[in-house]
Length: 99
Image (cartoon, rainbow, N blue to C red):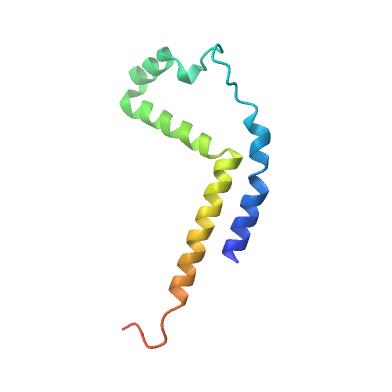
């Protein structure tokens, strides 16, 4: 049941990722976003220290993984691992018991 729900959710989300993929600009002449500028990185480091810069990068990675395609892949993998875990915990050989 876990696997079916997870794969169903992933199948629902994955096609929606192709529609939002066209939003990102691939133009090499486009200006840098505020987060990509050296000035912003320097100011972030001055006011928040190295930990602030790391947290900002982690948040950016988290936002990237929350897009539909990577999220669908993550859900599919997590449901597969959870289903395998449940199956391995519930199916023990008949002769072995826990003490």
